[in-house]
Length: 289
Image (cartoon, rainbow, N blue to C red; front, side, top):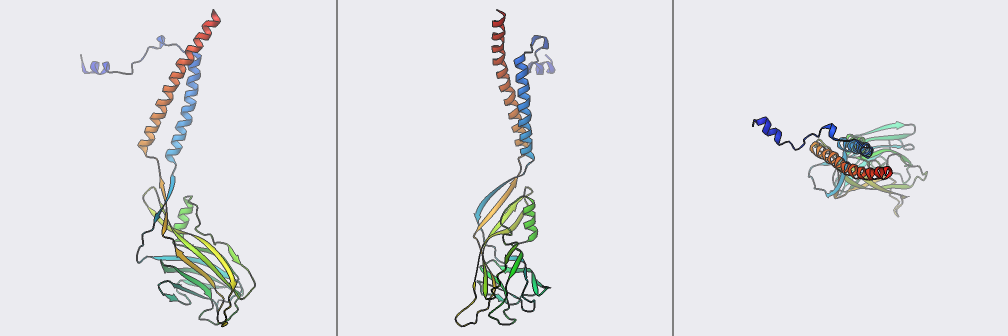
C-alpha cells in the first residue's frame, strides 16, 4: 500500500455520494435558520474583535518624588484692572510665591483683566489665589469672575483621553461664573484632585487628573478690618489613582470563537434537522395512509 493510499484510509470525513442523499423541506428550513444565526453570531464576534474595550480600576497611588503638578487656568475678572491683579501660590511645605509672572499672562479686557497661564506646584496640599496682594490693600474688591477653563496636568493628555471616549470630571469648573456685585465677598473653591491614567492597547500610558470641587462665597471681614477679598483655589491630591485600560480581543481567541460558533451551529442544526425530518416523514406517511 502506497503512502497516499495509507493517508486516504485515515480519512474521517468521507464523502457520501449525492445520489445516496435526499433533500427534505425540514432540512432546508434548518439550513436557512442555521446560516442566518451563523451570520449574526460571526458578525457580532467580528465587531467584538475589532472593538477596543475599556476597563477601569482604582489603586493606591505611589508617591513620585520630584514630580510637579501643573495647573492650567484661564479666568476673566471683568471689573478688576490688570494693574491690581496679583496671582499668588502657597503650599503645605511652606513655599509662598506672590504675584506670579513667569508663566502667567494678563490681558486687559475692557475695564477688567484676563488671567491666563499655568503653575507648576509640588504634589502636596496647597492653594493659589487671585487678589491684589502685593499691589495695594483694599477691603473691597470687585472679584466677579468667569472661569473659562481650569484643569490639572497636561492639556494634551486630557484631550487624548476625551478623544478616546474616556468620560470624566477633567474640567468641571469650565464655564463657571460668580457675578455677585458684593465687593466684600471672598470666593473659595475646594478641589480634590484624582490622578487618572489611560493605558492604551500599544502600551503607551497617558497620565492626567480629574477633580471634584465644592465652592463657597462669604464676606471677607475680620475684626481688625485687615482682610482683603480674594478668589481661592484650594487643592489636595487623592491617594487613589484611577486607571483606564484599553484592550482588544486576541486574534487566536477570535479564531477559536469562530470555530466554536460554526461547529456548535452546524451540530445543533444537524440534530434539529434529523428530528424534524422524522416528524415530517411520520406526518407525510400518516396523510398517505
